[in-house]
Length: 307
Image: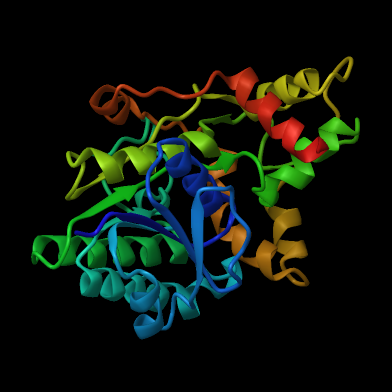
């Protein structure tokens, strides 16, 4: 009988999923290219997620696989779909279920209403079309009976080890330096706390009730990015008004001329220029799980970067 819960990918989210599984006393395995260190209680195996044969060997004995691997942001169009297909194929071979770390890109630009699982999918970016196609492929495998699949679609997250905003926001706030945000200070935004996202993925994997659909895991209550910055600043122990910089689309496009990641970020700036409100009520009610209180989530993130 397969009993292992295997996490593919050792980035910030994959590491958080491993910690959540270990905390639940599940038989846990991390599969990554480098065999990264993990908390006591987790087995580590090395495999390249794009090598289906090698990945299947590394996943042997798995009951549930958590797909948290992805290529560099600027290589998504060349590599991501094939990588995820390899994970799907390897999971089918070992007879496991699959929880996929998805996102909200396929819903496109906000349309004056909070995003829910029932929102119309209308991608407004190349990456949105890519994620929609990848999600469709995964759900087709479920519908065809090859394996059971659940999709987790968090909003933009923050937390320990997520350096895309960790270094430019939380680490700088801890040092009393200006925090760097994308978009407008007055734009409402719903953020997800990384441990909440990980815990939600584990809940999907162990519950047996969430298969065959997409779920939005718990999100923080929407607040303006300026208010979010002020909360971070104060929790970091700083005085007065938060020191911030907000990068607007024209600046992002200029930086994209020399920075691969900023070149890719430019098409997603709409998410930070307009209200981006996300509703996770369905998941919260189904799994009796809400978000970590915001100040606690901020404090944990700052503490990690200080350490």
